Length: 117
Image (cartoon, rainbow, N blue to C red; front, side, top):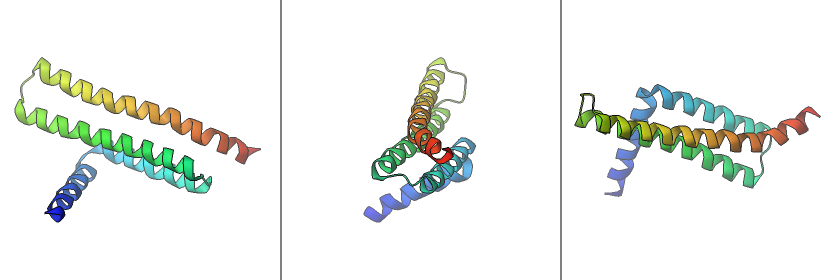
């Protein structure tokens, strides 16, 4: 039974990676940011914060994608309530991404300044 849940989760991840352009862009950015953190020799605390932020953004995008798929399945016609749900879901992704950018600046800026000086 445990294997079934993992299989379903991995199928979901694979589906998002292979079909969702926004997720692909976010994943590429996450990989670049993680490589930069290796180069800049992040400490344990910085790694924890970075991984948390990356996970939050990617998870938010997966939740948003799930909500959009479900909303489209329920109603293909223009429905103000469905639009509101989708807009709020997208806003959650945007909020998470913006906060992650701010945290990323706090993590990377001092490291880059030290590297340049």
